[in-house]
Image 1 (cartoon, rainbow, N blue to C red):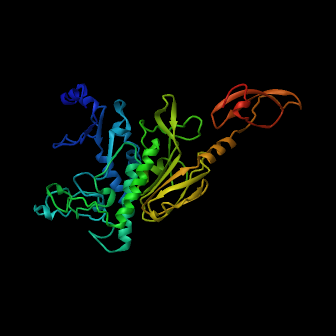
Image 2 (cartoon, helix red, strand yellow; image 1 turned 60 degrees about the vertical axis):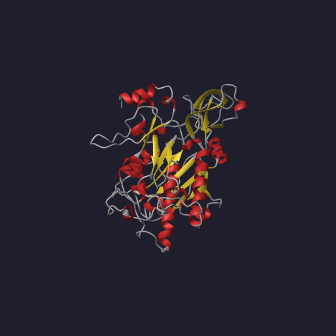
Image 3 (tube, rainbow, N blue to C red; image 1 turned 90 degrees about the vertical axis):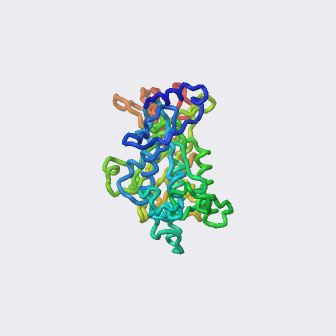
Length: 411
């Protein structure tokens, strides 16, 4: 939107070159303005927070909205030349539950604020996993830890800018207080001792996912996905996969009970340039998300992108984080309930797969010639989507030669 203040900021020689971040809501009926700020601004994405919380809490029928949120919310921010970084993604903030408490309390517990527990929001989209507050139940404790991994992994692998509250990376609790602004006590303090083994383990997981995000530009693209094929790869920049291993269709998206989806990242990083020339390419990744409470055999998509996958993490199997696991490209992955998995394609195998696809049939309009007679044929390289006109001896099939052997063009 346009306003005198925003116009003045845009024209100011100092402010216009700073990082501009808005909390796009205020009092009043017209106070919620998410997506309404001009180019150059990032906005706290409250819809991201609410959608991701509801999804991992097990609410069905949200996969379409989830797909929009984790890919940068182009429905909100793609106008006026804005980029994915216009979406500042978060599931927790300075007010409200911490991540630990969001998975430990269904209701706020603000008694220590001395306002009769009347302050703070009551609509938190939280889920205590089966018990209100601290518990000794090992299954509930394990589920809470698994859910914290789901939330942070989703946040850090989403397009846009990730934001989380200090202490969420090692399980800080405010004992259910979701309005601790008035507290200067152990409720609001951070305990940096990391004396709890579960907290230390979770911190190591967060470090791992941060390293993955920093190392792979495909998780922080400067341009929105378009769902189009990447020239020369046979893969789309992003492809949404159903548990059956096929590209999702309209019935998949509209299913009221769907709580599981996957997406295949083809490796393109948008308009990031390498040495100011070639578009920078990245690895191919497959992300699987299951918010159901039961395991699903997620069939891997039949594609030339990769003939095998290696697991980088599985939020349901933290003890196997450093154990190499390879999955055939034509198989399936046992996706545990309420879990998220990241797989990386084998680049060498992917290249071999593309090379094998460069076997094509000759196509002519004439009758098959006699032995020894040459003819003209059009050859199409399925790997590169290019056509070449060559003269060959009579034959039913040929193998496309290496690049240096071509005199009529190059692959």
